[in-house]
Length: 261
Image 1 (cartoon, helix red, strand yellow):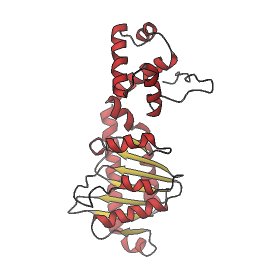
Image 2 (spheres, helix red, strand yellow; image 1 turned 135 degrees about the vertical axis):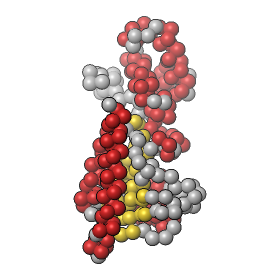
Image 3 (cartoon, helix red, strand yellow; image 1 turned 90 degrees about the vertical axis):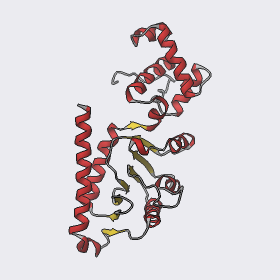
Image 4 (cartoon, one colour; image 1 turned 30 degrees about the vertical axis):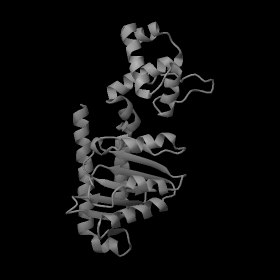
């Protein structure tokens, strides 16, 4: 079932890419006159300059899809991700990356920021897109040789892009979990252990709840502490909270109930 869902998602995203291409081809004259659709001409630095303008001009939200290789297209070290630091601090920023394009260093940089960029990982076709305030998008498709970059303000295209982004985002894996623990199943198991540590339950009770031996449970705890760079169980809990691996504590300092998990 998960593979089928991923295939359906990829098909939907490819349809959006095709819709963008057809919009550019069929309605270029109509939309170009009122600046609702325009191509970005020139080299990749021109694309990044346009991305910078859109990012700086955003007032509420920036959503980015980063799933297309751009090696050799622009000045080294300059990318949409670095340009995000020029966004207004009040703007909510989400970055959706394909697994092969995930920048682990960028994800770690977010941990120390007051308003970090939220980064998630999902299987998406090769596409770059920036959607600002739900009204303007920069979409880049194709290879470096046959690249097409378009600034789009056509409401129906923006609306479809925004809905698909939200649908993918809901099921995508938070990047910090992937970096720290690996795959989704391992991350979910690690969260259960971290929850047990925060709740202060004994190793015996936690092991029974997780249907593992006490010895195995303690080995998992030691592995998680090592992954988090923690010297104590308490420090592991603090580090897990910093990474967003656990939901926030309630007003009484206790973890919220997990009946919905």
